[in-house]
Length: 139
Image (tube, rainbow, N blue to C red):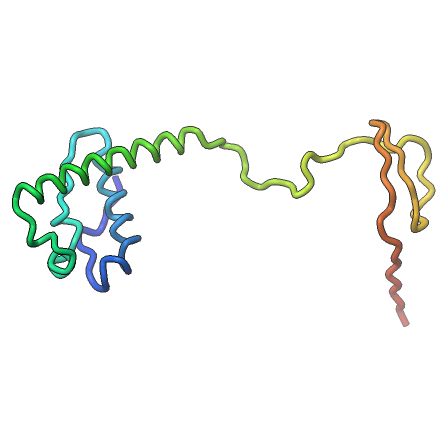
């Protein structure tokens, strides 16, 4: 089972959002098979609680916020699990030329002439796009 940092400190809430999100995902992933209770007080530092105004909420308001946090977290986890299940397991490397052309030449091949036209057995006709030679000299 993975471990997550229990305290994230330093910087503003906005600057550490990705760290908080990561911590939240860790907590959710550990507790996904059972009921759990996330509390905003566990996710924010005392300074962040004060700066965001959460520390001034009544017990009823804080409870409502924690209920929403748990409901939102569960729906986020369900969405992530659904997305992971729907993603193909194939390689994500894709050819820039889709689909690939697989065939053989119809007739004889006599080399490149700069304007060579190729007729393939699948009926396609291709023309050489550029005419260039690279010369190498050895002395």
